[in-house]
Image 1: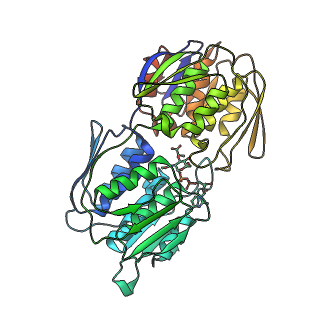
Image 2: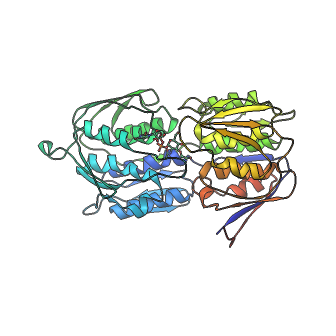
Image 3: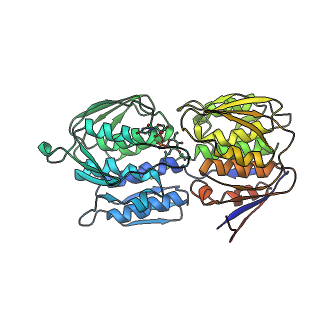
Length: 427
Ligand code: EPZ
């Protein structure tokens, strides 16, 4: 198994380019199922999750190729197998995003329930309730969702008015993809407002759909009869950009993060500035520097446009080095503090009380062997290794990291970090 070895204490300098947004690519690749034509998605990062979804699209019957940042989903040939098996869905929960498109296009789908993951139960009840509102018949059978469109309409979904009980990103995306081919008008309320939802709507409209209001809490969709294929290049990954911004701030460096979508990180950037970091737009990027001490800042994660849960673990490392006490409250997922015990092994002083982590800043962290548990927790451990002033840090089980960060060790080495990937480590 691979690990990442870091010898910390070196401020990061230079410039780094952010890859395409994983969480924009995943739903957009599923929309290829909504058209019979050949679609292409560009600026796609080379990540495990992308390759897992490509394998699922092939399993469904669409010839899919990933190369040099372009994913090509071939035109429909013959019959499709509208089934997403557990062995693929368990590798990546976002596989449930094929449910809406399969139901919309073929009137039936058999998709494994994703099951929980390290950060929480991650139910999909909102996805299923919304599809039922559109006329789908949903049954659960031995861990699978068996969905069928309404018989009276030959399997075609009808428009509906649906209000989400909770703010869900992939729930909003699944129902958008179901509604674009439904008969009639759909109004979705209490939608997720993330930029990835907006980019999905933009791509659907390029395909001929009629989606309005994405990025606000109400999305209105007029169903159409058919959709064209797409050729689309995705935006830069705002969470990867934020991760590099924290790394620059934590190491008291000076880094230009190119193509950083600053406008999609306002809730996070304001907290970074409160902590004493300078964040300035420079060209199409953002320059982050920090000279003085880090100030303690209280943070509460919340749906977009507030502070993103996907930046919580990374920001916590910064607070571990602040001069004082800060409280980090996680309101989205019920178990997203698994990095805390690993950071404590590096000398951090953090106490978890329910969904709040009380962080007392310390003078320095020290290197150790630590275990990655989920995607963003692993990023926080890499950042902790970069700032550890003594000993080296081995981050184990980096397959978690490879799900969402393309060649992170190469990008950090390019900024002056002493970091390398080592293979064959027992973890
Ligand atoms: C998306 O996950 C992202 N994944 C996550 O990024 C991100 O952390 C999350 O949104 C929140 O921003 C993708 O976009 C592929 P949710 P998603 O549905 O959509 C509850 C990463 O690091 N809920 O918004 O699965 C749920 O339990 C990943 O890249 C229900 O109760 O998250 C959670 O507490 C991690 N019922 C909350 O809502 C439902 O039907 C938010 O979940 C759906 C969700």
